[in-house]
Amino acid sequence: MGKLDVGVGDEFPVDEPPEKPEAGSPQDDCRQHYESWQRHRDEWGARKNAWKADLHAWRDGFRAEMRDPETRQRFRENFERRFGARTIVWPPSFLMRVAIAIGLLVLAIAALPLMFLFGLVALCVFMFAAGRRHRDYSTPQQ
Image (cartoon, rainbow, N blue to C red; front, top):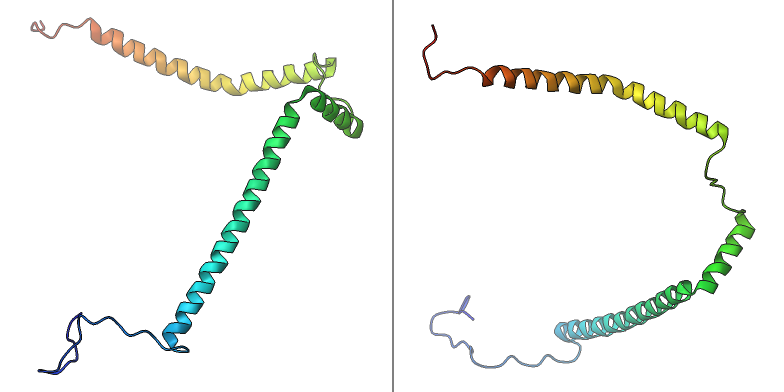
């Protein structure tokens, strides 16, 4: 501690311990509030940890239950009873095959200009590389 606001020659108690606050003083009120906050925080933390433990126990039990083949079969039967059997049929019907063929044709037509562009770029790179390879710059040109 420094001797701020202490006149010259006044004694300043640096090494003496601070006096205990009286009951009802602002420091005592603050300490009581802080201790009640700590108790509340600890209680809340204990409730939170208990809730997490319950959640993890339920999750582990559910996972173990769903790994059981009989439970999975009951789950599938219940699902099919409520929502019907699976609707994905393979191989697809004739109309679905026609729709897939038309979709692939449209995709090929859309990709055709890109393939031509890629071929043109590849041809230009090849022609440039082939034309530069056969010139010999070490001897003078005639």
